[in-house]
Length: 607
Ligand SMILES: Nc1nc2c(ncn2[C@@H]2O[C@H](COP(=O)(O)OP(=O)(O)OP(=O)(O)O)[C@@H](O)[C@H]2O)c(=O)[nH]1
Ligand SMILES: O=C([O-])CC(=O)C(=O)O
Ligand SMILES: [Mn+2]
Image 1 (tube, rainbow, N blue to C red):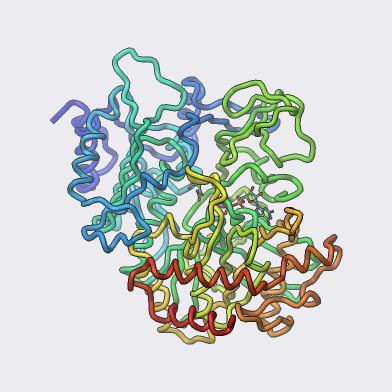
Image 2: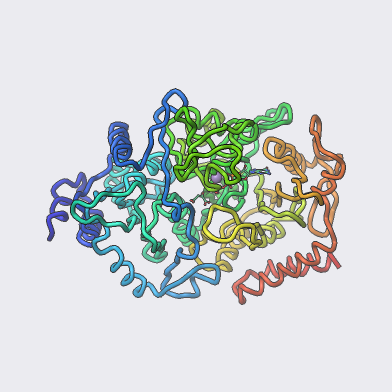
């Protein structure tokens, strides 16, 4: 046994044998200089962030503007999730399905063993016990991330509950934990000076669904490196959910209180950078409707004994898209961020030591330091912040956080929204004819690609339930799981499903719908539909609002814009049905039959 491995054993604050064995094995493999067990304390956070400032990875922001907050700037080649390099290595290729990259597990393990061998030389290995969801849940979902990045430790502390308390609970319950190994893949030679953002050209984000393990190599960026988030709470959790009879989804959760003081809970699935965080922190422009937040990115849900679908947010922080988040569009997020305790990545710096990004304020500062460290002036034609710049902020800093966020059993859902970024075709809102039609809408969800993932922007792709990059198993089986779970409960109790699109354009290229706070008008219409109060047109694609049924009080919108937002265009839909047909053919027989029936129904209604 090497010296480092001996240190693991002598300093380990645990007697959990599986954990000790795994950490020892990983230390032997990766060869760090030190092993450090993360306790999750405030003092530890201060110490780590001080060290990160010293190393040049973090810049401390002006405490009068952003208290206890830091800016990080990544390598320009490490700014987003890398879907091309993300793998689901199930034993059988067919279990990964056509939407995932796959490699034979033993072959992948061999490759990873080669990459991780010595990958932490010259660095500290941090061991982070974490829990996704409530520590007091009936069946808490634990993980342990090993990482050689202190930036990852600091960010994980915002995004999840980590440290000693979690470790004690793992021991007390002798619970399973997901082992999640992360390395930036940049070992240091003795005496070699480190860079501010170490990473590797070569990146691998790999999941082994049967053994429920995660390996992430080469990137320090959020979704690739904070392994509790997309890797665990979506990819691995979706597999756990399949096996255990629940659902792990890419959704926000919102609480609404009507003027009659009736409460409703809504979950919504939109692809990355398509408006989840913004809707989750909605500031309604209509009177007397109150909105509170429960979650902004990931939702775990299950049918309870009464057949009611209940939802919890397994995360403790926001990892939000900065650009476009502003005092006009999302004041609730801005207030949360302003309380500090945040880590900003790839934002611009203001001359007085704050951060800035496109859309934050009405007026653009004249001078900034851009995310790549260059002097920037407002006459330049490139953005000062990276389009996928992020803020990482504790969720309890949201003033409008619903108290139910803290309840392990979650909230009962009245409605589910599916939505994407579509310039054409998809109306502002369409209510599904019934649950099965709603699953059809989810399964055919489509969106133009964004800066949240590396690759071409603005390319239209199908993104079932906004889970395309996050399903840990075969897409057809995933849809079958939705159908199967819901078929066992009373149809009356199922949430009502709606398809929304905030991003449709008018012929002159502008947004047809003002969006943001005005999306409260769409939410209100949906609730009134549930209550049987709002009118709709029964179209071939579902129930679309009449112009009069939407509350447009005080809204500055032209008749042309409204028409463009609500239109169901026969030509566009003929093309859409064709494209859905093509999409469904890619499933090669693994699609639930109900959905083929829904497509036939759509086609015959369109004819
Ligand atoms: N036009 C318009 N843009 C919006 C609306 N809602 C959000 N956006 C913009 O869309 C971008 C992404 O919004 P977010 O709310 O951060 O998206 P998200 O789904 O949380 O993204 P991830 O965190 O990557 O999963 C931001 O630039 C927003 O300003 C809307 O209603 N209308
Ligand atoms: O995972 C990330 O890096 C950020 C995110 O929320 C997404 O891309 O959906
Ligand atoms: Mn978000």
